[in-house]
Amino acid sequence: MLNIFNRPEMRLEIPRTLNRETMYPFIETVIDCDKLQPKCSKLIFGFGHLEFIEPVGVVVLCSMIQWLRKRGVKISFVNHTKLTPAARYLDDSKFFERYLDHKLDSFSDVRATTIPLSLVQHARSFSYIEALIYWLSKRLEISPAALSGIKVCMQEIFNNIRDHSEQDVGCIFVQHYPRKDQIQLAISDFGVGIPANVRTVSPNLGDAEAILSATVEGFTSKPGGRNRGAGLDILIQQVAGTNKGSVHIHSSKGIVTAFSDYTTVQRRARSSKVGTYPGTLIQMNLRTDTIDRGDEYEEEFEWS
Amino acid sequence: MVIRPLDFLEHCYTAEDGQAVYSRILPAIKSGQRVTVSFEGIDSVPSSFVNAAFIQLLQEFSYDEIKLRLTFSNSTKQINEMLLKRFSFESTRQSPS
Picture 1 (cartoon, one colour):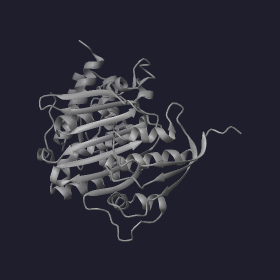
Picture 2 (tube, rainbow over the protein chains, first blue to last red):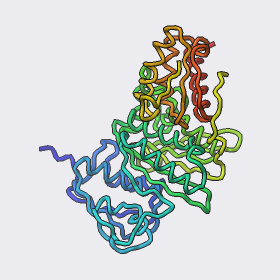
Picture 3 (cartoon, rainbow over the protein chains, first blue to last red):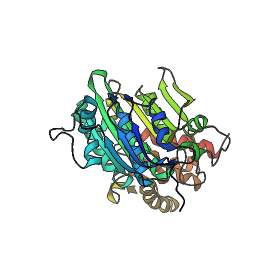
């Protein structure tokens, strides 16, 4: 029987800070991203060094575990029971309840500023997004209709996961930072990734250029069908253009960041120097001080 | 003729939702009727829905014909912008000047 695992058991220490920069070497340690295979059959995550984890780090950790488990890797945790601030944050996000079937601290509870870590299948995504928007409207004291632009961004992402990732599940975590007038939303799938899809129609593009192409309106890896290549452009126009927030898209070695310089939407592509992200990770930093309340009113339609 | 998607759909979200709307619009327009799609109860629509429900009509009719035969009511700023942006882009793509 062919043994696809290099080693039977590995221990992986989660770095002191887990975010979009530190995730690459972390992932590379246990996933052979060229062959898209785990490097071991049993993995022990060490939490002893972890001091700070961003919302995107929670999603990365969750996505990794889902990906590894799906490929038969047995997962366990060590040095996680000491209730450090980072451990408490994970506990309050329901991370340990998901993977250990119990909280670390029986008194831990979902923080008012977060929506807990969720694995959302497409069939459930419409109601999930409705609940997210309702929660946000309460946090910001505005009507849900005023958040229609953000709602559509979420719908575009989940429709993309279903249509392109060859998976049906998105891992998502949301946090409101009221003092910074910001919402951070991270969502990931560990599917085939944007560059692999893009290269079915544009085979010579590198990973970063492939993601950039995918964000251009009209580009689709499935021409002739129902996909018309609008989703990522709409996401970027809404978040970076209208909201004046920022979007970070990571897939394979490619990274695209979109932001506004107040006159135009800028899109910057670069390559990860260390490691890859097997799948697609999107982080949206939304500003709450630029939300247009005009969207909450009915508007007559007129052909231009 | 007025078509109200929420009369027969739970939501206007997916391409399948859009296809259900399209299957009702197409025969009506082909028979010469003017169709109004009412977005009553809906505050936003994603591109998957719009592409399937309305943009497909560009394969059967010209953009000018669609403008004469199809309109929308009970809409919002987000819905209007999505419709116009998608139609503008796809009609130009199909008929480059």
